[in-house]
Image (cartoon, rainbow, N blue to C red):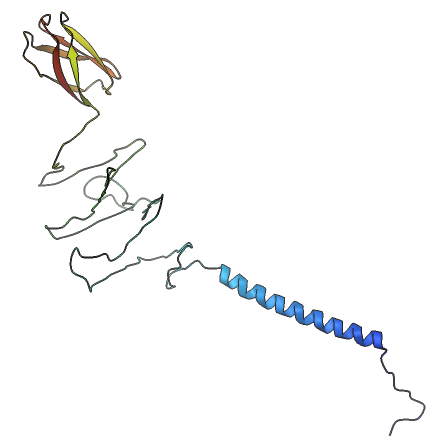
Length: 234
């Protein structure tokens, strides 16, 4: 039974619509917040120590990451392969020096390190199947490529070797010296000169005339054009 003197308040139609609209908007806001949370979690794709490696993202770790493949024969495939179009396939960086200097005398670790104990294989292999370079080393102020061996050969070349510090020039007929411009010549450079044709003159001496030039003096005037080769070792 309803109490006497008390009237039940029935909401108007407009008021019922306002409540329905409020509920609809609240549900939409809740769904949007949930979607934003999921999207925010998906955007954090960087991997840390113990996580899976995420492609296309920054991956950091506090210990060494090892990828090993043991189901292939030597030289038949790769344990890890990096490829790119128009850029580096694999890049190795080392921004912090080592705490101690290695026995070879140069401080700091390497950006890329290759190691092997098998005499039949190499630690690092570079291959170019076209006309470009297989391995390139550059340095702004230091050594571009350092070759070092305690008991073996530091550098061994199979095939032609090309040096920008070497070249070929001609002593004109009737002249007894020629100035060569081009190669870098330090104050302590060794200048090697060899005559490449039959002639009546011989090399007397060669000396530096500038930072990028040197002169070759012969023992007399050439009766014919005389070709000679040089190699400057700084």
